[in-house]
Image (cartoon, rainbow over all chains, first blue to last red; front, top):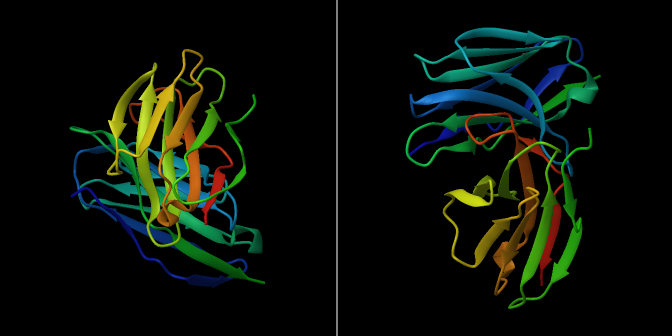
Length: 112
Length: 113
């Protein structure tokens, strides 16, 4: 069973702090990993993609991938109230019926 | 470049009816995927189309079907609607289907009464 798991939260951090979101997946045969942000009542918005082990930085966001341990994380530095949203981790599983599988999301609240 | 568009945005249907939802992908994107999102189940994959062919299908009953046209636009159809079909239906487009980034449309909120 191919699964993507996330801590459902809610995760609450003060403004200016670092928010750390984690995701684990169950199948080693994966090449593409994505983080989406979804505001309440809106559709998911792609914020990060990562394809190889290590860190990838984009502004205040850093995605980290460790394929051996089967986890991917998202760090948000200098968190802002506007970062309050649900963050979805998605993994593209290869082999057989290739498809993008989403975790159920972690709800993040950044308190002013 | 225009984003993914979906029509209609909101829909109210009664049990037993059928519904057709439409999706226009980003220009140049050839892959369209459909998802159902509910509070309890999260984002569930329905199916994916690439070059007018269904490449992949999720674990949904045969009442859910779709198709893709030569211009990459896609439609999904749900027949014999049930109360449990009430959900946000999302379409996502990508350049290709092999691990590329997917971009979501605004979704169609379907309510079945």
